[in-house]
Structure formats: C-alpha cells, structure tokens
Length: 452
Image (cartoon, rainbow, N blue to C red; front, side, top):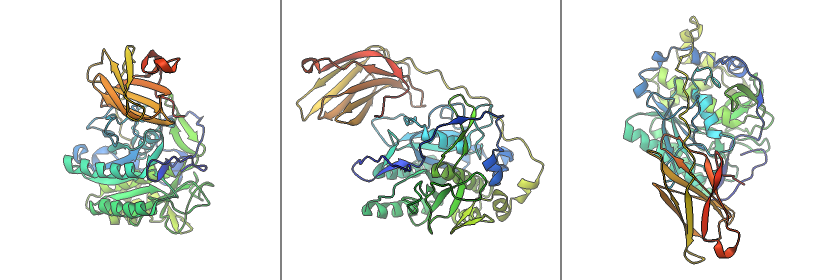
C-alpha cells in the first residue's frame, strides 16, 4: 500500500505493507520517549508509567503483530518470555523462522514503535512494557490475503494454547483491490477477534485518492490514518474517509537507523500510525483489565481533534476518560530500564553446499545438501525460478519441489527458531544447460537473498 503500489498476485489479493518509500535521515539525539510526535499526541506519559502498574509480565495481554516478521536487534531482541518479543511465528510452514526478510525491516520497525525498551539503542517505544507475538505473513514485503488471514488464526491459536489473552491484532498493511470473497472473510475474521475480546487495528492506507482500504474497512476494525507530527492534519499521502476512526503520527516519525540512532522517517505511513495506536490500546487494556475491547476503543477518540470524521489521538484526554489521569499528572518517572540487549552472534554462513536438480520439466525438484550445521540450526533455501521465489527448510538438506523453470538464483543459510541466522550464501549458476543440474557454494553474500 505504497503511494505507487507494486502488487504481485499470489492467488488472492496481494497487499503491500503500509509504508511509503522513504530514506532514513539520521538526526541522532538522546534516546527518549519524548519525541516531537509523542508529545504532540500526548502519548509520552505511557513510557513513564512504572512497569509494575501494567500487571504481571507473565499474564499481561499481548499484541499480535501480523507483518513481515521481526528481526533481532537490541530493541527487538531474541524471543523471550520477558519480552518484548515473546513469540515469533510464521505462516510459511516450510520456513519456521519468524525473522524479517523485508528490505525495509517493516515488521521490525512496527515492533520497535510499539515496544522498544529504554536501552541506549534506537528508540523508546510508546509502551516499553508491551509483549508482542510476531507472526510473519510475508516473504518479500507483499502480503497474500490468505496468508494474513492465516496469520490472524495463528494469533488466536497461540492465545488459546498459552492461555495468554490478546488485546490487539495489529495489521499495518492493506489493499484497495479487495476481492469480494475476501471482503466477507475480512469481516468474519475481524468479528472472531472481537469475539475473543481483542481489537483489530489496521492501516487506512497511503493513497489520498482512496478511502479507507481493506482490511481496515472491515466492520469492527479500527481504521487508522497517518497524521502530521503536530497532530493538526492528515499526512499528504493519507487515505481517509467516513470509515476512518483514528489519526495517529504517520509522517516524519521517529525510528532507528541501522546503527541504533534515532532518525526521522520522512514519509512514515499509516503503518506507523497503526502501530502507535495498537501500543496505546494495549497499554489501556493492561492498566484497566476490567474494561472490554469496546470500552477501550471508545477511549481512543476521547478529546482528539476532529479531522473529517476521525479523531487524533490525545493521550491526556484518553487517560482521563479511562480514569488514569493521575498517571499523567503524577511526578514523571523514568521509563522501565532494561539491560542493554546484544543480539546473539550470527551463525557462520554455509561454506559446503551442493544442490542437485532432478526430474522432468514439469516435476523438477531441487535438493540442497549441507554439512556442519551449527547446534540447533536448520538449513533454509531460497530459489528464484520463473520470476518467483520458492523457499524450503530442513535439518541438513532441503527440497524445493515442482520447479517449472531452471533456477536463476540459489541461496542457502543456517537459522535457529529464536531468529538467529547466518548470512546467505550464494550458489553458483552453472555455465551451460548441460551442467544445469548441479550447483556449488560460491561465497557468503549478505543478510538476505535479493528480492528483485
């Protein structure tokens, strides 16, 4: 859902992550919850509330983030019951790792916006005490509707299996071209989440010529539009109409660059606005566990500036409406201080790989063999064939089935379920058609296979 979408069809409606293209402009400053946008929208008080007031960490309602996955950084460390990332799930069963392969680290940025701790790296999230269940529903930054719906189901199943309730399902994604059949399914799935007692918070879109896009347009969802840093207007690219309910910071938002320094993201997007709204709603549900999702959703629009039919977030008025005004006016306290998290050392890249293509033109299979697997790691393979990426995984071998065209690219890496990975190793393309059935390792290449 960029201003100029590059959608690809994956059997159903393809959906783009709701972030316009932009370049991080580094403006380093001391890590603080008081960013210009958090102050303008009155949200900075949430990060100053002592963590104990949000209830026991082990039973605190979780926010489920259905996105591109969450990479391991100091602000989004390896999966831990203590949070902020308490589970990394993956819709793609042949790839059990829930990391973030998206070049823009879209899901990682959403997670940091919600829950990044105070740790002298990156940013401070709107609610550092949040606990996030990440569900990876994309391999390249676009989303198949069926994959996102499966991701919502995985959120709900995880909650049932663990006994930990969900407060919010965050969908920082969308599409203006929803298939009629999927419109019905979006409505059904939103109703199921609401029936569980949780909210669906979704991006309204980044195209001013369009109204609220799907799934944000589904009845029962909270459609969030991108607002300016001073909370006075919609961002120039924002989608909005009568279905839009909330306006939250979405342009010139504060993010973290690759070195962990705060930076201004010029375009931002309704993705960021959605994540901010989810953080506020999740914090309200933790501070007021007696309130149901409908009551908490009504608090979101308390006292905000009316922009068309939507209201800007006004954190102070929201706190007062929820009976939490004392937390805003009390002596400010430091945000929860967490030990600085150092990402685990990356795994060594595969250096001894061999791949063999077998079968006829309509039933080709590519099997990749590796040796020297690090403890607890599995082999991941990415193959580009016929203009599409195919993936597979296994212990020391992985097989990609039904390849109709000879592969043009072949990559492999080691990965653990906590999100730790090696760099990808490129495998050499045979020089002639006659030798096209056997591939060998060339060299480690980088953090991900190319997406072009």
